[in-house]
Image (cartoon, rainbow, N blue to C red; front, side, top):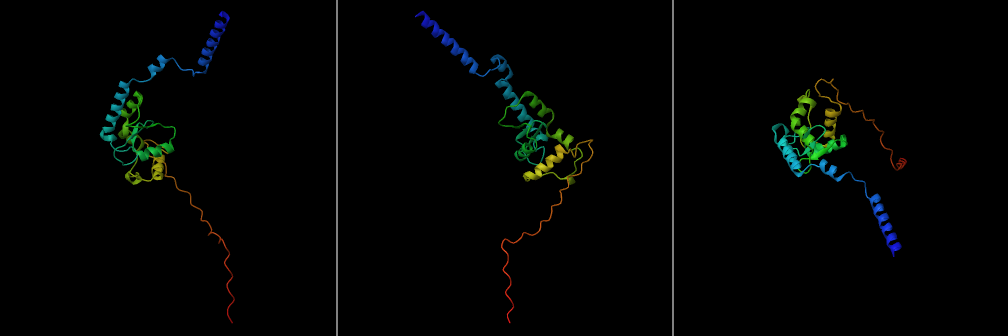
Length: 193
């Protein structure tokens, strides 16, 4: 019986070590708990973002004339409307966009949004912008928004101190020959005598 009990204990020990090996290697639970913000911090950050959004300069989208932006563009530290957020996602897929009402914000993200915001962004990115340059109106087609955002953030066309960048001239479209008829036309009948 002793041999059987000893073998059983050995098998249980082996199973326990196998289970440990199969489990994902997690960081120290205490260290992980220290990295996660408390609910109090999350609530405080959410209130701070919503307060920043209520400021006069942030009540309109940073990229178009839409009222009531609902998304925070973390990289640019601005608030944008949903259509502009969609255009941002297409142009800048690596940039973080967060819903003001649904997302949890880190303290440094809140600090950036509060210190910067849409008004400061306009002073940087649109310092040399003029009314004649045009700005996409609220509800503009996505392609128009993408062209404007590309000029604003990629070309830096209106950044203070930058050399003016000419708007891109679309390449002339080649004129295609008329399509060949699918069926050849029947020959004309001979003239009547």
